Image (cartoon, rainbow, N blue to C red; front, side, top):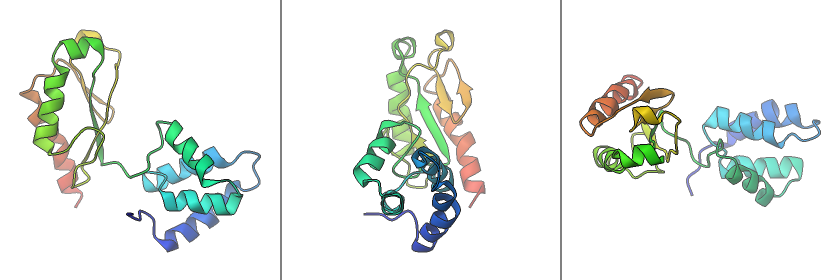
Length: 165
């Protein structure tokens, strides 16, 4: 199993986060949010630490993490890319866009590219059917997208990943 948080980081997390919320009536959500913010996910090793420190079963913690879509078990890429698959977008070719994205990035939806640049997220209706099909990258909205637009959208965001190395 991949470890996402080092032992030293766990010690810091205990001191800076768990101890901060320890006396709250229901500290779990705040602690999980802090983990998500700090590590980009709530990895198993953090869940085990929370369990030990707050005497909450890891099953209960994992249940909360897996229930709420805001929490991830593994870190996401720098950019979250999603093709809207709502009815209007689907009718206007979203499935072809999904195939194009997967082919260009060599990754399947629900996973992160090997370079950690993109996480391909399943995306339901984004609420702007007049602009169908829609591709979201982080908070950036791209409407009336064609298959030919996909390489340009990806390239624009790959630049930020390549520049941050």
